[in-house]
Length: 179
Image 1: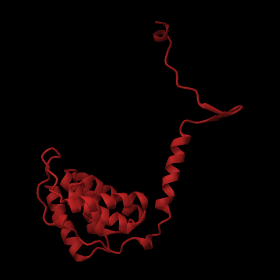
Image 2 (image 1 turned 120 degrees about the horizontal axis):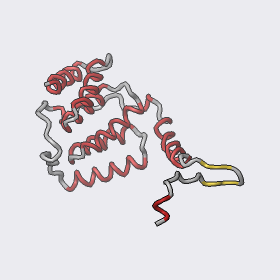
Image 3 (image 1 turned 90 degrees about the horizontal axis):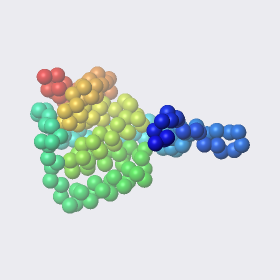
Image 4 (image 1 turned 60 degrees about the vertical axis):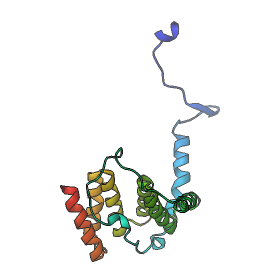
């Protein structure tokens, strides 16, 4: 009963050496710093010059709710390729070609969130990729996240490096997302 009477106190930081305290955030910061160099070491010149515009940009249709969305039937070969590509992203988290391949396969097997994650990592490597922004806008649109879709689609459309095909597709999806 006495345990309920005492006010809750924050735990004391651990002592590492006599008189020295370690903040509880130190392990978290160490983990973040361990992952950051992989992305920071990849020069922008290693980013793929252009991604092929995938089939996901075929035509804007109304996004479906996640409950109503069924992933496309992936063949066992596609699923195996997806699993292999996923493992490759763990082995080479900052390799642009690996990330682009995984994103393409993730879309084919219905893992929209996985594809988004890989494409956003590509933008961390080189933010000036209108094809990647277009694909991210389309994927967010398919998930029903119109604000995120608009952000990426507008970025793709406004990019001076965007091809006319990318601008046209971005404009088409921008119109659909603004409805």
